Image: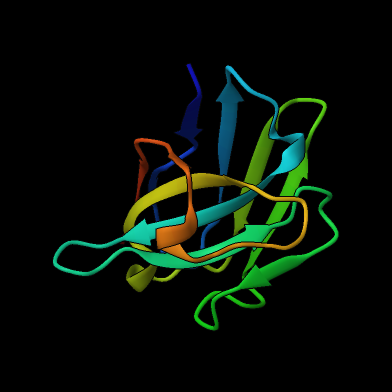
Length: 125
């Protein structure tokens, strides 16, 4: 069974930091592009960041550029999202998703094959 599990969410004050983790079980992430998505109440799920299978290609939504950093450790079968300078508008459920491709970084919701169940991030004073 192919499973993705997110962790690291929580309550943080504006300007604070969190590091989210996406751990895979049942398969190796080495051949998968991983994307981070988020969904706030009443809004559509949006792409936040992605990283290619090799880690050589990364992409970010304009709203998080310069504040978020995606990375991966294939030996640990885990992808991370370091989130700094958090804002209240970053509050959402964050999901990681995987698609099997070695060609590019994918951050399109409809192209992802596997999804985690999400971790809640709340940015509030």
